[in-house]
Length: 366
Image 1 (cartoon, rainbow, N blue to C red):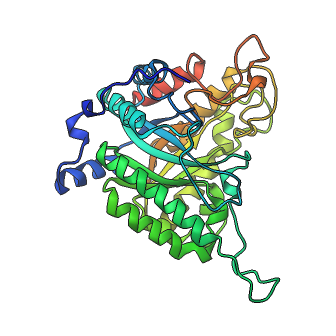
Image 2 (cartoon, rainbow, N blue to C red):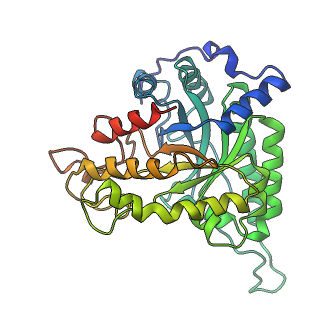
């Protein structure tokens, strides 16, 4: 267990804690109009990490790199992808106290916080596989409710962290991430209820992180997304067909995604889009399939640096695009194949690699 060197949650910056409706509206407007120069932090971090000296020191390292937004993650667990009950776990879920402490630390360093609870399954299934049949009756008259109890439990989790985001002055709150299996049209009313209850508890910028298919593979995206303030997308578009592609080559490969996402923003009624996740491993051929976490390969930091440079070049001046959160700051998962090349680790992290200087250069832009 990590040590518990905590700073007081009461030490948060006064301006980030909404005191009245006009202050809240002002903070929300700022969050919606500024560029999110962000980093994903703490994915699958064990309980105690955020309150440890090591965890708290990461804040200073991020601030020194010019990062002004952080997606702060908290794992909310369920046993399997077909379980209907979510819960805080004593191994994987950070305590509310340590979340409050590290949010205060981020605010002290001028970094705004997007609080991002993440549904995770103990059987290691991806959260997008959470799914249940709707109304199946192979045995006529025998119906077992599954979506209702799952959404009741999920909604309770969303409401809990909405209140935490409100009282700690988080500048944005993400109600969910990549819950593909739960996004069917027959769940629209259930999502409407989740969004409405979150709004009652949290008054800043409300968003959801969707897979590209949610926005691009349908004539119209789910209607409940339009009730949010912004929509995030997990952007891992292929930027190359071969290893060693240049920035210019990656730009041309990625160029069609700009128009596609612009149209997605229009179908959402003009809501801004944010890359809630985007990244590329520092490995040979990493830009061919940026989301691929499994292959073992040799270290090549140029793939990662060029990928970052290419999508920033394409999207930076798009008025509907509000920035990105790089995936990710630190590695909390067991990925031994990232460390087989003595030249460097081949994971998604960029601190200490050439991509960090690319990030610093873009984040320094007005």
